[in-house]
Image 1 (tube, helix red, strand yellow):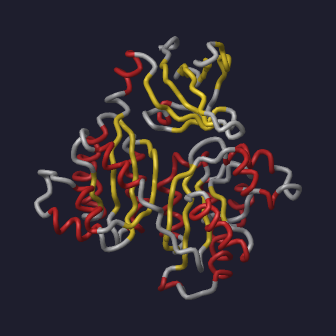
Image 2 (spheres, helix red, strand yellow):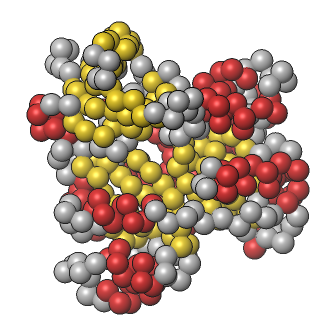
Length: 361
């Protein structure tokens, strides 16, 4: 319906005052419009404005949406109508791609996205056997819980928080009918809607796995998140890299400017690049060369190889010069070009440290 409106309570941490501000946010799906009302001061904060990056897929409990570079966290439903519409229709579930199958994470995510799931969060993390046992819990659908816990503790796994209609049951069906037949027994997923929130919180509380040496950074930009699975697969399978770390992020403008500062005064698109990186959630991946492709090469080789696989910054040029590159396949323009990759050999370690140590601290 054109006049449909949903109401949420959102919070924003003011970086200058350190205070958390609460707003009522009204969302109109027909035109992607957002209105905001300052709850404390009881006054309008934002008139009805079209925000294309805020969509139905981005709206769920705990989600962070970006409005004019402000990261707003959804903490409550604003009315009963919104709660009734979203509590089941925008249900969450957790999928864990097992250790040893991290190279299949892109294919698993792509299968979920093609089936209508939205990706809320991604993290590559290592679990102890006790962590894995707690995560699995007492699920009646697992015949060998001890064996599964041991398997999940053998190395880094990739956790993916998904949102969709009746998500827990729908994703279990997807695993049984599509993922297992195509990819094998490579995932564990939440079994009950009652426990999924606790399981998701426990997994994402773990520190992100990372190597921080002989690696380079690849960021799947906000404008490419709808193709996250395909882009991850293009980098980590088609281009021959191994993912050694991954995590979802949202950046405020200060952090985005700091990260992209090397481009300031160098490229005319700098301001637009900052806008893109602060427009929504994205996934940062630490990648290394696979052993069969020369895993022992220096960091310089990793950075240069990743840059070559991503292709020229302008997707139009990439489609002519390197038609099989990531940007040629998934980029729109010089700013929304699907991925950021480490440009200079000496920046490989700096960029991975920035995301996987500084921002994770």
